[in-house]
Amino acid sequence: MATRPQVRPLSPHLGIWRWRVHAVTSITHRVTGNGLAVAGGLAFVWWLVAAALGPEAYADFIAVARSPIGVIVGVGLSWAIFQHAASGVRHLAMDTGAGLELGTSKTSATVTWVFSILATAALWLFILL
Image 1 (cartoon, rainbow, N blue to C red):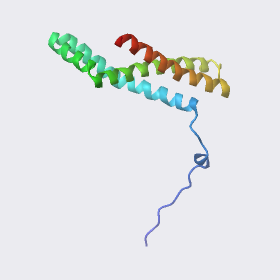
Image 2: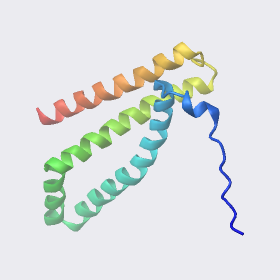
Image 3: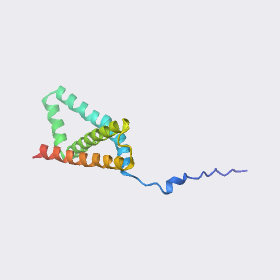
Image 4: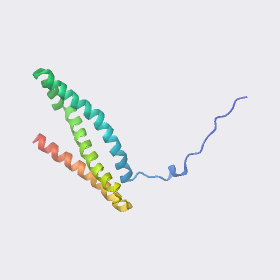
């Protein structure tokens, strides 16, 4: 006799839950931290190895870094640095008990996004101009 698999109900909050800026900011903080550790670490090691191997290897690294893909990666890494840093300051303040009110939390989360985007734009305008 075949048994039917047991169907479990979904949690009731899943149908009404919405993404909020402070939740997305907190999740993004974790994602950018891991991304910086992996992608940023690999790029940094590649740069160090290229510098240690000599002018030809370093020229290859610079050629890739200045290519469109390299610039996209650079913009992404610099945005991740600014986002993670701003969110880290936000978390540090919240760890002291400050800014836990819903309105303040939403405002500080929004400020981290605005800051990271503006800082990234300013950095790359400085680099490219």
